[in-house]
Image 1 (tube, one colour):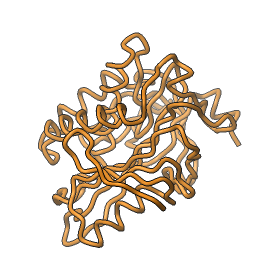
Image 2: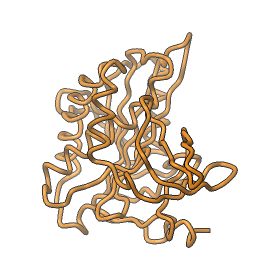
Image 3: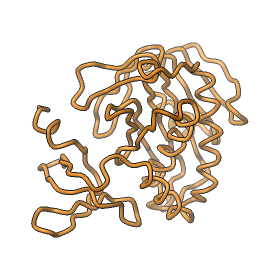
Length: 256
């Protein structure tokens, strides 16, 4: 597990050749007394994690990076960082390739032409009501993408975006600093939410949301003020969804 320390746009960076998971390593560093902000990257992950325990394929050539924050995040606000992080990555990719028009997919993925090229995973450790350590993990398909996935996948290179991992991380670090300042530990989430909605995939369209115990279909109406997906059901009622996987109706039928 060779590593070296450097800098990513003014934020400390510890870069590893191989790690189990950049999120797990960042949390371990926090437990050992490391202070954020700190980036942890790996050229390759052997135990990459996605939401709900899904594995994240982690071959070399893509970006695996986690940002550790140890300035306590107010209780209940850590999930909002998914939207902050998605906007930061959207800012970077939009600047690299303005014609591509990436979209954000609730709650934590980014899409190019309907296919997923990045995922975000927030993990927090809470003490006395506030999150003492929050890790924002990014998996960005830069050079390649998995082919056998429940949701269509793609990568930046396949869309004509050529960027080095160092340059991508530097730009992402700058964008995260800007978006975190706007978010202002939750005080600015209304503006974050509004920005997210203008970049969102599927607003106003029919979707299927896979919940832990069932699937529910309806129209993606908006986000509520705390970031829940508001689904208009066929009967006309609104359901607020906190956790779930979103699919287009046809792709939901195809997936196992």
